Length: 494
Image (tube, rainbow, N blue to C red; front, side):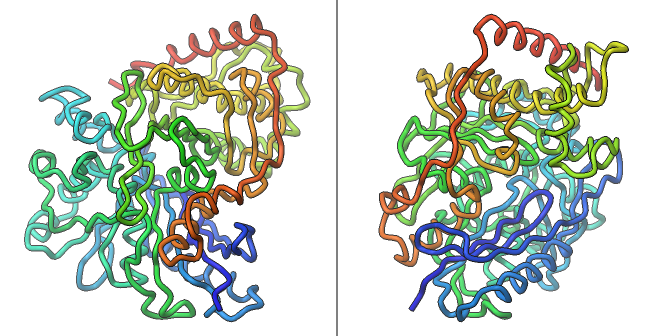
């Protein structure tokens, strides 16, 4: 008898393994952080072998807590940090170098060179994405250019590429697969054909042989070869933000969610046809269930939100734990007139400015560390407002309610301010682990553990709701100053 579905949630700062029951409740879980490697300004790396080892560790850690036989797990889903690129040796499985993380900006020159012919939107018509350091394709090109002999080895078919989902699937099952959501984040996949685009591959000089086969988000990719999960099918694969959309039961056009993690990511379900953004958003895949039609989404991606709080903790030592930021921010009534624009990796949606860098503006002798903490939290809410405004403009529909998830949604001060600055209710679900849950849902659907989307929707329940309390005049005054602060970040990098 099968009672559970499991999920590997490989995120930017940690890896988790979670086991869910039929109602979507977390039965057991385990989590382990990995190192953030910063070799140069603007460079961000992870060790793929460390992440793989941590994955095995958290699987063992969670299963030790599970009071039932492992045979009661029907399937495993995978969700992952999306644009982080790994290239490895097909025979040995050894990575050529550290993974280049989605926040990394080293491919700026490659993107600039590609943009000379056709501009930043050169590939947007096919991929839904602007040329930006965010995406995986230019990272592959950088690795091939900078690891000695890599280009020749790639042409001989000796190398494989993957986002973190593919890296884990390959190591667990021996199969070289990805799903449409992860493939859509490479700037190499055609949104309509759901296949790698030969013209773009030629432009970037990337051999098709290094790329994984593109599958749906819900099907059996293979079975685990060894270890405590041996024989269990890996049957779900979604990029982390699409997994959260799926876990939040946003199955109808017009339904959306915002995930507050290392970065912040708002997705809006747009149905079976891709909607091209005119307001700086990304057109991306939402999910694809088996042989059913693909579902598309508009996305607003913000690079630095939770990472800013980590920066206050780890770099400035302003707080000891991330949770302390709320307590510190509550020592003051407002931001004291300062605005913190965390353009550490440039600005993502809706600006797409790689020349931007972070600023704190409005400083006076009055400012305390409490004001810094409050301004850091408010930065997340303001950036979300920019994305929501763009989403309303693109979709022609005003979002009347925002579903939220991720680690920062338990920060009461932030959630209230978010509702105030958006002027819409903000709602948190009972099951807050929506990213891992979405991957589990996809895997369970593939094996018939759950019948259909309506059964998944019935699992969603409201935990808490915040209503806007701010006056319209104050809201717009604060937001206009934020927009002024954003202009101060631009043109910093030549």
